[in-house]
Amino acid sequence: MKKQAVILSGGKGKRLRPYTVVLPKPLMPVGEYPILEVIIRQLALQGFEQITLAVNHQAELIKAFFGDGSKWNIPINYSLEDEPLGTMGPLKLIHSLPEHVLVMNGDILTDLPFGNFFNDHVSHGAAFSICSHERVEKIDYGVLDTENGMLTGFREKPVSTYEVSMGIYMVSRQAADKIPANVPYGFDQLMLQLLKEQLPVRVEKYAGLWLDIGRPDDYLEAIEKFDQLKDKILYA
Image (cartoon, rainbow, N blue to C red; front, top):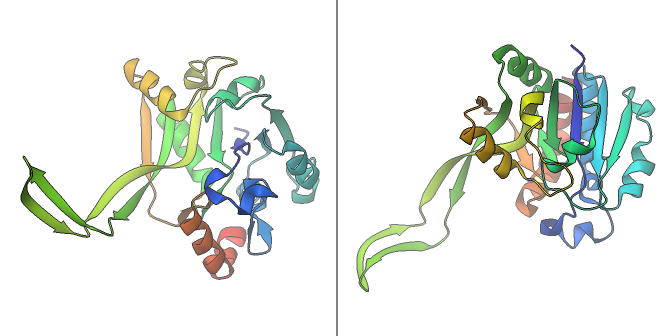
């Protein structure tokens, strides 16, 4: 089965300002490469044969940099949103969407084996697959539990653990068909719709590297670690 991917590359990168005032977020550098180039190199290395970049904000800069993909030996085409359509809405603009497609954000640094994730989804027959990661959040304050103005408990800098979406998905046509046309439609809306209709949504937890460079802390960590990680990410 031909492996195709859609990379969501249209965000404005508001959380990364002022870095993204000049450059669109997918062109933000990590080491010597823009983060989107890292992803494209990974997908080409792992056997993907076609990439669609869903673009909006500063689309011409992204098109000028990546062209037709010949530099990376993988065909790249573009789907342009005239207005922001959310996370899942852009898929409705791609008329040649295959039966199964990898969909991911264009600002992720990970060593996930994308090809394996693709194959696992197909073999399980799910409508949608989510790649998840365990995220630890620390509250840097003393947390007070109160009732009627009286202290009932106290926790010093508590730590919470969450299983969160990595922004990497496998979408089957039965899920893509639920996305309405020409309106903003997010991942959250699609998940609620699939749950309502009891369509199978698979979650695959990944314990390896995952950094969302849309978050300033993750972006700085990615810059610091990239030289140590690039051989594993780009040449594994």
